[in-house]
Image (cartoon, rainbow, N blue to C red; front, top):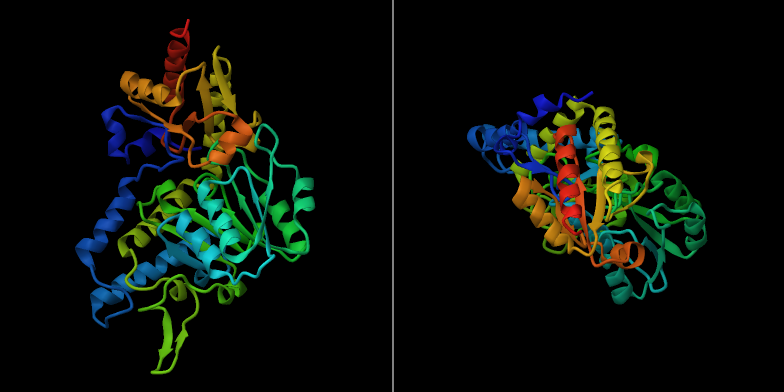
Length: 401
């Protein structure tokens, strides 16, 4: 079990009375992660893989170690399989832009995808003449595997799925979808921005070809993230950028790229951010991802069921907490979700997200609304905070008459 009171002490921003329930957009960052980044600037601020002096050597070691930490966290075979990125979006774009596409290649995506895992495939369709087929879930955001089996055929080059919907929190059966895709010779890429921070994700168990996630959603700094590339797939991806740090050899007539993560990390990387992500992984590992999941399931159940019981409040997503993360999207009568979010902020300093959550297809096809209010919880949220949100929402709903 998580000691929430102890955890909260590591987030000074919470001492101001803020109730932060917008972790699906970006989590808060604890002091141990900030301390690790400051350590870099105070003790060994230098470029990596560029110098023989001790500062560069230490920075290089810490940055490489961060790759190893992330690889262990995901259970990747090697740290060479993990590329540091700025965010999930960059990782997904590396895959979309790096594969060699042929006219007629088929891509299977879903209605539940974040724009970052949707419009990039639309662009591949426009640029390369690929075909794009969309799989739809039921009204709770849950997929039927039969629909994937039907959509994925011998012409399918790639299947793109969200591991967890950022709009309604539903969890996709990633391993089962990957099995279907692999049986038909298709590659798989997973948007794991909303899963890696909240549950144990084992890339070897899932057996996907690519998986992208964001550090800023898992206690890490902004501008950090990762892309897992299954070892043998690295040679099939043309790096989006090449230059310093990415080469094995250069002559006047040609160049040869190096292997592993350095192949994809051109120029000076975000060193402090990468090291900070490595510390965030340590932090979550020490807490235990099983404990994180248990804590969030309990809070998530209370949040979902509590909102559902309030008259005039409509909630979205799966009812079973096993099928969702601790994220609930909802609407209140005819109120604009932005007005709901503002009322919560002004009245009780409760911070939630409102709008379409960069998931307009989900809004249009599943929720049938222009947007929702969305409360998303994490390791530092407490039962008491959920109760404050629910009581405040009751007041807002009653005010509608």
